[in-house]
Length: 30
Image (tube, rainbow, N blue to C red; front, side, top):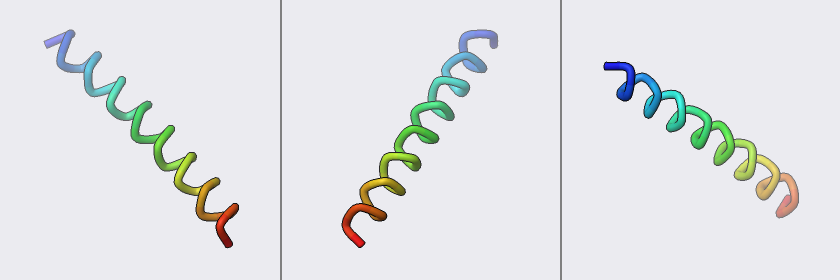
């Protein structure tokens, strides 16, 4: 159970990083 929650936390962090990068890329393209 602990491992699952840990993986979920990592996934959330990766998702946030992707969203931030996507936002920066979109702003740069615009």
